Image (cartoon, rainbow, N blue to C red; front, side):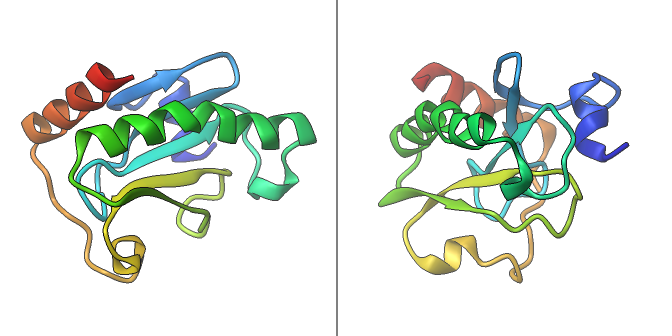
Length: 129
């Protein structure tokens, strides 16, 4: 069972942004930038492109209002999207506010945010959804 499956099962708390029967979106607790969100299918599958066709298209539709909320909540040129999938063997996409391509550089050190800071970011995004 992956860390994402444990989050989905409620065994590990998270800062939920949006959830439905197929997907959950929550803040990355070790973000590249403030506002970094993970969008995860509830069905545990290692690779994003192994998702069934309907889920592969639905994950982007699920993510679209979150991306809009990110753009409204943070000073950025756009919401970037990235599929890396090396750190957790459970399909997921990263959404993050970006002004340069380096904002989605996963070799950079991650931010360390306090729970209070994550709660503020969560509320900012929830207010814009």
